[in-house]
Image (cartoon, rainbow, N blue to C red; front, side, top):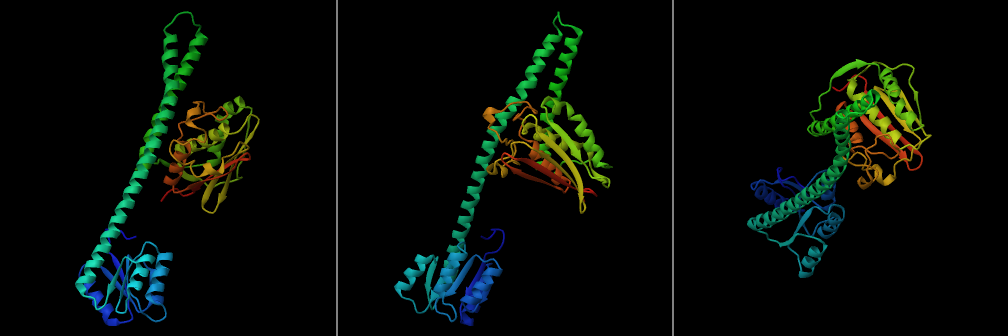
Length: 381
């Protein structure tokens, strides 16, 4: 289907050169791009190699007649409009052509004004169909955005409620008498953790906008990826012990220095390991590996968790999407099947792609998941 901003392209198929020339001169004056073919075989070759909007075809031709050409076009290129023209027509010919899908049927000798009028009506139909399709796509997108907004409100309100409740409760406790110094230290730790949760949510919201607008800033530096992985793995040991999981590494003996945004890559590693924790039952295993593949540093996070159902794999990079239903959402980020705001993988993919890398997920339900990130060693160009 043609873009309305580009000229309508017409293919005139007729074994008489004079007819092709008349159509060419008359239709190009109207602003159309016009091409020609002597018969149906040549026409199909051109249609398969190029894009046309309208085919203006004679009925009687050698090698392949117009009716056979019409049938083939409507079978293989249903978006193409076909106008038939002939000097040997019967009512039966016209009815058959219209049944097959011809837009109109013209009798020779055809006046140029008649051709222009029929082509104009055909163009109007094409453009109307394009507009209807565009409106359908807009409507579908609006429907998706409404679903996304509802999911966002449901999950975000739940996510915000927990830290806000903690802040209100424990800040109140700090002003009350009767609590020990140790209790007060615990209250402050909970308050600080709640503030960090709120900061994380706000940061996620901000980065959504930046990634959508392709304006996410990167602070590029050269660093050792294996060292960063080891630091993150060490940092995650508390969560690992809470869940009785095993987190190990299998790192390349040597890796060239990586040029990337260190803090963003650190964030992605934490997110991927946290996801593995959430979807791996107690007692399971998680392995973080690194290796070199061509000009990419590759990190994989492999778990022995519940895996991702095949029907969910195509949706896991959607904003605010969670494998479990948002009605059963939980704020814990490390409990088995615990929740988050549903932005982790979407943000990770966006950050990786901003680095001109890619993120790949392999998973089988009941057998675990492997997430791989590919980062160009020399950084984004």
